[in-house]
Image (cartoon, rainbow, N blue to C red):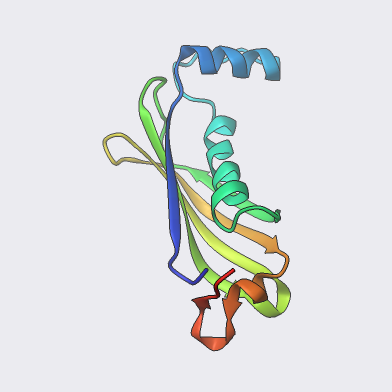
Length: 131
């Protein structure tokens, strides 16, 4: 794990996904746009399952929604490591979501606690250690 590492995922939220969101949240969402919490969930998935991965704990996240995403359009969310602080087990990441045409939907930052991040990154070189 090193600065610049990035992962992404692409998802299409269809009418069934929106209906499931409405059933779980108890809210009605009649705008035809993907609800912001569903987009935010893409980042949660990436941070917890991909990068940094298992054992990640959210400390802080900011999301600035600069566009809307229509239901049925592909959304690609990505997280990129911008700084690793192994002495504090902290990882800073940039977050970005674009629609299928490349338009920015949201962007932000995440700060996560990753226990043993110092064991995943070696010394000052920032090179990933073999596990």
